[in-house]
Image 1 (cartoon, rainbow, N blue to C red):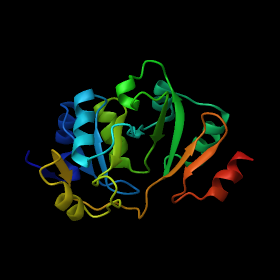
Image 2 (cartoon, rainbow, N blue to C red):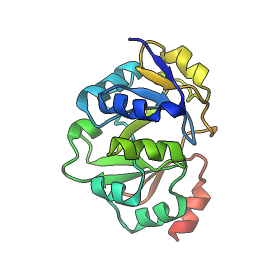
Image 3 (cartoon, rainbow, N blue to C red):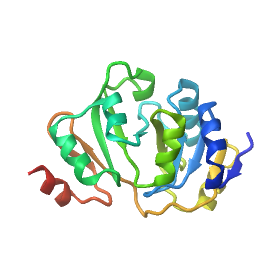
Length: 200
């Protein structure tokens, strides 16, 4: 496939291409992301492009508390984390709503969701009209990438498009599972101490 280069000014085209099943890489407030809509064939394309293990579910991006509540159950711990750190560099693992297909979560009853601190992405999600699946734009088991040129070099011909601007962060998001007892699965820009402080 041809990997088309876009700028952020092409947002309407990118919304249309995502909605049509394309997979598009774009910069986020953390690392470079690779996105698709909640479509089984589009999701497969992401796994193939990255060489990702199909047992490993993709994270989701939403643009509001309401959108999160549409797809997941928000408990008290989750609400505290949302109020303090979203939008931002935190991915929260929730119990998913029953209507969310197993193909989206690879059979798991949970789903990781992030609200990025990036107005362009929030507008993109609004344009698509539903949450989007977003994982890091890199070949699996290699480091996350920040510069669009590096993403293009590693994924040219494997993805449908890329936004030619660099990511704003320097590491992947902190991941916190709140489905039972709180578990910090990965420490990122938001520290373990910060998480514990707001949950006290």
